[in-house]
Image (cartoon, rainbow, N blue to C red; front, side, top):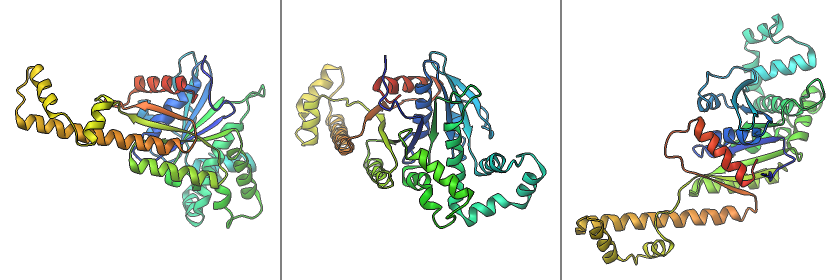
Length: 331
């Protein structure tokens, strides 16, 4: 039986530098949590329709739609949240304004949503995170949670703290009133033990540094840091002794030539030189990755590794990644 490293978390926010695969990881995490019969909502907030592409479905409307069945009978629903739809939800919940009524249509026609979010950029994040918070606390008629967990494919690491720390963003906009109350209620969830912000990285210098900076910023903002997911990990193709020799410039070229001859290849000087050069490059990359692991280890956060996928991500890949996340304890 697998045991999660975050048993109390019901909101999992996934962030990462662009190109690290955070959307893929968020989708795999949703499947991992849903496994065994749970109901999970996977959301995105950037309007990229990345979830729809991963699950090979039509672009997601502003409604919760089932996109996958997890092992053991769990269900994954997906939602693409946009500020306009979230604002109409907010107006409906607090002011009984129908999202499809004449006032809502008038607001759309007047461009009120674009105007409001342009004048007060922080308002967009309040609306987006407010919808996430509503999904987290929503109850069914019998009083049980509508979803066992909500997974958010969040903004990149460089913007995640600003996105989640809406109380700071709204400080100059609203001191009192319903928007201030909404902001405070959202922050109460985001800063609670119900939330975990997971960071996706690669074992490369810039993604590792962004991860370190992101953890520092989240901690300073009193937002709960979850785990670090190292994505696209490649296994070394040389033994440790050969890696050390290659990195130090002491690769046994004679042994390399002998190995080529034993394999039935003519060990001419150009081929031996090219292979030796590749071995050095490989050893340097492995050493860089190990330094990255050491830097991430200093964060003292739970860490998980996912392998490099040699082909395009498909649904089968997501299920495999989900299984690996469960085996390592993230879900």
